[in-house]
Structures are given as C-alpha cells and as structure tokens.
Image 1 (cartoon, rainbow, N blue to C red):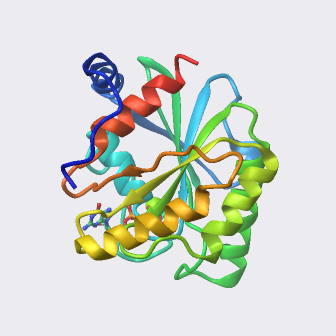
Image 2: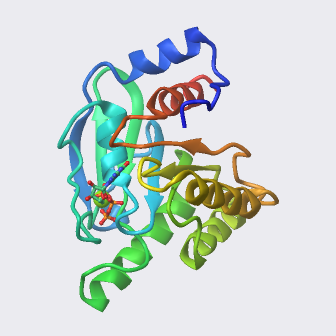
Length: 216
Ligand code: GTP
Ligand code: MG
C-alpha cells in the first residue's frame, strides 16, 4: 500500500492537515430533510453500504476517536449525522448505510428515501465520498447510488476502505473492478483514494483532497 504516490505537494498536504487539526464536533442528527441545517456552507457526505466504514473514516479523518459512532453491526448510523468545526467553513455528513442492515424493513425504507433525497437535492453538497470495501469492490447497490449521482450531476469520489484487511491480490482485484466501474461515469472523480481507518493509511491524501474543495 505504501507505494501509492501522492499527487499533492507538501504545502497541500500541510493545508489538509491544518483543516482537520482543530476539532470537529457533532452538531445534530437528522431523520428527515427538513431537520437539516441551512445550506449555508460547503458540505461533504460519506455514503456507502452498511458497515463499509463511513463512521470510522470520519473519526480517522478528524483524528477524533468516538466522534462518529461505529459498530460491528450493520445499520449503526441511522440518521444524517452532522459534524461542524468553528474554524472551517465545512460541514461533514455521516450517512446511514444502504443495502443490508439489521433493522426492520420499514426503517430501512425510510433511510433509503432519506439517502436518496439528500444525495440528489442538497444544493451545497459539494462532493460525496462513496466508500467501497477493499475486500469486495462495488456491488449492485453501489452502482445504483452512482447512477443516481450521475443523473443528478452530483460530484463524487470513490474511497476504498479497510485496505488493511485484504491480501494484495484481493485488494488489486477490488481496485480494478472499482476503476472499471467509474471509468465512464460523468460525475465520478477519476482517481480513487485508498484508505484504512485502522492504520490511518490515506488520511493525508483525503484531507488534502477535501481541503482543495474549499478553494474551488
Ligand atoms: P453503518 O453506520 O452501519 O452504515 O456502518 P459504517 O459504514 O459507518 O461502518 P463503521 O464505521 O461503523 O465500521 C464498521 C466496522 O468495520 C467496525 O467494526 C469498524 O471497526 C470496522 N472498520 C472500519 N474501518 C476499518 C478499517 O479501515 N480497517 C478495519 N480492519 N476495520 C475497519
Ligand atoms: Mg456509520
């Protein structure tokens, strides 16, 4: 994993580090769109299948253990959880997972609707990070979310998670499948970011990538 070269300069990496050097705090959990704060600042959201590691990635990114609640059981995050910093014009949104979750069907339906409405109708949503498990690559649920984002012209970038878990052949295979999937997608960022919340691999790059969004 360590051979992945960073496309960022030292200054850009440092700017990314500084953005997350001061604390992000939990501001609220939203069960419906009407609960969301006003669209008054740039937002990024972390989306992906249940258990792919969205909440863990937010903790690793912000360097704050326990900021976003994580769990071994799919379906931990059940609301749009909002994180903000007093020192940055940036809002981070942790989303419920799509696909399988250990929850009643009715609830899963509600989340699915909430996810859809949020992803396709939020004016200040600058980029969605679509997380894909480094052991598996994309599945049908991932494809359908990417289809929606393409259709709504919402910019997104794939983040490979749990890169510490697969062996090299498995990881290479997941990366290849993911690359093939995003190749022709109009709203997809062409580059993947490889991460592990466990080892913190890829955090510098992800921070720099997010920092750049604030400049554009
Ligand atoms: P939902 O909220 O249920 O949709 O899940 P989530 O996508 O937020 O996943 P979460 O962060 O709760 O992580 C799920 C499980 O995967 C937890 O047991 C984490 O400890 C584990 N996990 C997350 N990221 C990594 C990683 O990079 N490496 C390893 N080895 N485990 C991870
Ligand atoms: Mg979660």
